[in-house]
Image (cartoon, rainbow, N blue to C red; front, side):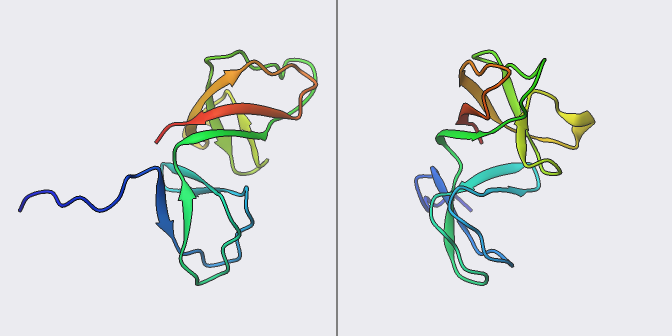
Length: 112
């Protein structure tokens, strides 16, 4: 069998079991995507798997993130981190704009 082109790949089809709100980070195995629009449970929608997004991060001393740092999604705390959590956190992309200790979000480029 040969490969058959299906779509561009900057967004993927997704049908959630529960309602998803625009901006929610969704983890499927090792794939991290972000809902661009609300998706009702059981309805077909799409997740962005490439693009630039601001996502939540922890604040406080030692929470600065340098541009170029690898970012992982911590599902427990619902925030980006530079720690892979011993494999528990999923790689989501790289920081493209440095974020300070007190910043509540970090800008990342999603990487599939």
